[in-house]
Amino acid sequence: MKKTLSFLIIYFSLSVCSAQESLPSYPTILRYYFSRHPEDGNYENVVNFAKKKDGWFLQRINQVTHEVSSERPYWLKKDKTFIDTVALLKDADEDIEKNVTGYLGSGTNIYDWYSYERCPYYGYNGWDVDVIKDFEDKKNLSDTILDGLLRAYGRYSGRYTWYQYGGDPLTNDTLQRKLSTLELPSSARIDKAVYYLQKSIETAKRLRALNPDYVTLVGNADLKVFNEQMKAYSQMTMALQDKKAKEFIVNTELDSPYILQAKNYLNSCPPNTILFTYGDNDTYPLWYVQEKENYRKDVSVINTSLLSMPVYLDMLKKTNAVTFTTDADQYGKKFFEVFYFSENKSIPKYKSIPLSSLLNTIRNRTYHATFDDSIASYPYKQFVFDDFSKLIDESKSSFQSDDDSQDITTEPIIQLNSYLLNGDFMVFDIINENAGIRPIYFTTATYTGYFNDWLQQNGICYHFASSETLQDDSAKTVTEDKLENFVQTIYKTPLIIYNGHKTISFDGNNTFFPLYSTIANFYLTKDDKDHANYWLNKALDEAHFIATNNIPAACMLMGPLADAGNNKKAKELCELYATYIYNKYNHPSAIEGYLSKKDCYATLTSLRDFLEGITVDNSMIKKLMDDVERN
Image 1 (cartoon, rainbow, N blue to C red):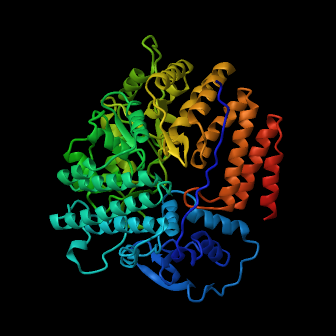
Image 2: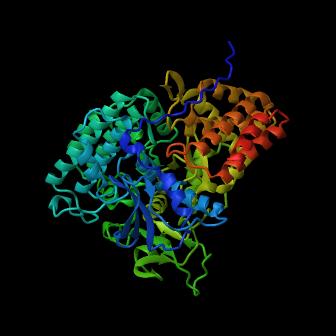
Image 3: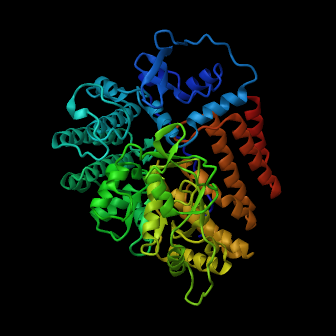
């Protein structure tokens, strides 16, 4: 029986206790502040908002010392009003939205917003201590407060390791002094860290028991429990506490859809691959199946976020997980955090320097930042890999057919930004050292933007290859054939039951929809609408219902559906996405994100024009646009 396309929009409701409800939201605080204060460009002492027991406080934080240079009340519970006598700015709507979006829009800001949203207190050194003190002994806590409490326990555990979650010592307790970059915690500190990591896990389990469908940044409550357990495993691994790490992973369970997704990642990689991951959801499940199921341990899963931590680099080096040339006496130094471009008039900035020379220039601090002699700089805006032929040999073996004798001569020239983070530096080092020896793969095609033009999809991962390989039609054909074979013989769709409905899993949506749309688009370039429709319909059938968290990824199918002549389903997806955008604008949250009025209207306009372009009714979207314009 032919299935019909069904959609389910699941809007997540948060259970908020009175301690949360009595305070204005973080976006409200930001909007009020920036409606009265323009961005002043004071990057040395930046604006910060502290959510405390008595209300909101406005702080200035010194970016060098991380100390609070000033603090004053901004909204107090007892008064229930803003304490700001500055007059409203005139004709500043666009600047206000720009500033608010800058605080809420992307990256680590989302994690801060989430913490302001879920934690009773947040945004100052010691918030974790205050949350634990006020809530750890209380019963009948709401799911939101339990979420905040488990985050507080996790943060507090870091006070006994490397303060990797931020903060500074609050007392003279020697067990909480800051360790040097490569110093391992003592057994006493490990015991303390384990205690609070366990408290975090126990609280996550309380949250799951109270509300299994509670949604966090990493997924539902069950996945949150798993992530807390794997975070503990990761901490013990970096501390070289193998026995304690194994104790955590032995007691950890992962639902089968996420095991399938982890294996989908690993099975996208040839033997002996170095696989760079980014966040929790594309790292922890992979480590889990490798360590607990002994599955595809030939793949070295390297988390790029952790590469900024010297102790993680030390662990990789000591366990021979991957080779790189930077030594501990270099990545262990204080200067090894961020490096800046600094123009040198005697050196052409667009000279393509070999990567090893760039790495040595930074490691040896040959040049210094103009604003701080202790910080390394580089006078180059681009680099090339040392031995490009190694990359070409490995790329050919992965992507070209046996009879493809094409010579690839285009050399990747990687553009550098105005600054380089130590984690990205280490990615460069690892690639340069292992090129031609081990395949290099990424779980995302948009890693920091450095390699976007040099990555080619293989399964649900992306292989570092040459630009000409990507552009050559015959090579693309081989790749698309591989993708089809991957879906038909290897790939397992990660489905979960959410609110009683079958849908694509958290994180699985980020790979499922791109996989199918890539295959469909390939057939559309050949004007083969029948095969394109086959893969598009297969994707929609496999996806079952499309829950809210799946909508942005699912809309990758919207354009291909229209190009394949399936205007009805293209319209359904378009209207679904328009509703999602409208609700995102009207009900901003850390999980769904923030949209300014301008951005919301612009997105709805493009969706209206899309439907107009395929000559179908767009009155529903016009109504949403009218409503946005009125408000």
